[in-house]
Length: 190
Image (cartoon, rainbow, N blue to C red):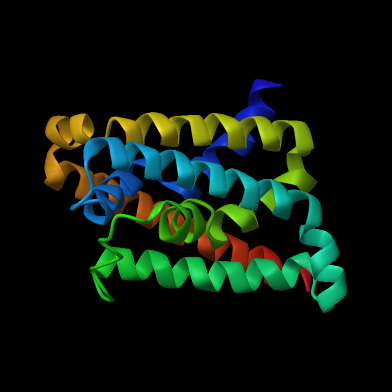
């Protein structure tokens, strides 16, 4: 049982990247008060939970309606993840991802927390480890995100911006590896 939980927990953890989210979260809420940032964090987590649960139960029906397969989604999701990971690793693309006071739903909840990495991982995990372990892993990971975002100021002081950036780069490298794995599995599943 623990093995199945970990098989679901680790890909979801890497896909969400709670440590990398802290740095982005602090950048998004620069003009917001601590209370407003906390409110936006909860709003983002609730949005991500709703999107993820909706995708778990409706994802395959949407695929059937559009005439695509999970293998197609794996390749497409893997390519998007690879682009996101490479962008994070080499530091290209827009550095400013917001900055207003209203950032909980978009971009925090969707696509930063519940982005292509998480949605792809959820669909694959349901088939490989089952619904219960996937949901449990999702809830534990979102709880970790809530803890991380609500304590973002402390994490930033403790690890420093350089430490957060370093861990984020390591997680981006793992995300690139997962992206290649998704592309490979999708390609062989076609």
